[in-house]
Length: 69
Image (cartoon, rainbow, N blue to C red):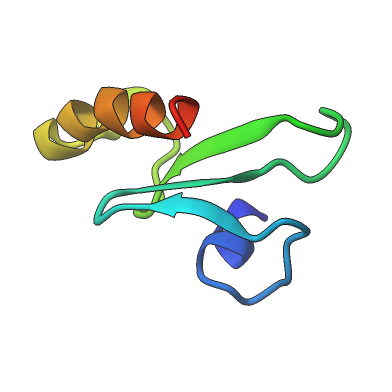
C-alpha cells in the first residue's frame, strides 16, 4: 500500500512533505490518526535490516529535517 503513495499512483491527503533520494515523509493514511507522519524508504524493503548503508545514514537527518519545519 505504501508503495502506491510513494510513487504517486494513489492520491494522499496532504501529499508528500519531504522527499530525498532515499526517503519519503508523508501523512499517514489509515487507523493511526490525523497528524501521524510516515517515514518510508523509497526502495521497497520488508525489514530495517535490509536498508543499505546509505539509506541508514540518511534516515536520521531526514527525520530531523522534517521535525524542524
